[in-house]
Image 1 (cartoon, rainbow, N blue to C red):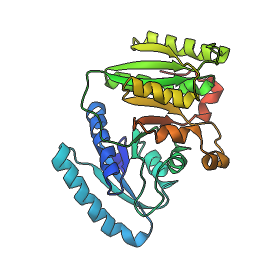
Image 2: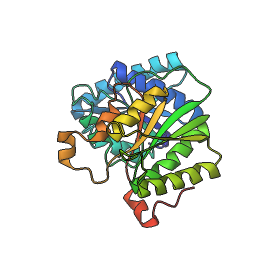
Image 3: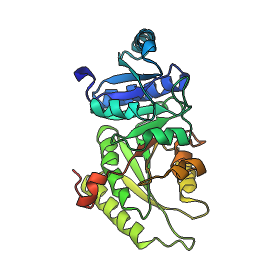
Length: 278
């Protein structure tokens, strides 16, 4: 698997939405100077040979379209475990996934997508449509609330800003009276200092508290024609969250079809107080 190391993984199910994910991965791979690996999860061992041939043919089409030839990998397993296992084995840089899932298995919309993502140490970029035409500056919406995990997103905002000219919108939660919670304010101070020290362009915008913070984040991102929203999953998310509908799944499957980078809280960073950023 050494040739696949540090690839961008694209879970691929031969559908249009998977090809949309490939288009995003191609844009990223050119900036990051990394390879792309198409990953298909087979239900049975006996299907692997045939699927490998189909996937190789798809990789050839992608090469003809984008002048980038992805590696191919077919694994027997479950979409809820195998995608992350493979990504960790090859130390993938990123997983770019369409919101509709593996063919013949569960469709990855909303809660199913979230179940695939939760637990991964590698960020997911979840997309619904092909990338927009290239722009001079990428607009990233970075919601900030009271949770300490907010700080973990910063290194990925820095990562994107390093490779793409970017403007980051720090979108802050407020109370109905327009007051910023002291914990949220502390996170904002940390975020601003982090971005300023690295000369990363940003703007602070306060929410109006007219709706849920996740809905306001989506509305704001749409109003600014954002290219990306960076969110965290809830720490220790429980089964009932999937059933009742965690806020993350609404963000992932947003009606504006804005790409969402989803990062899981790192329990191994808790002892550092989230302060050990490069």
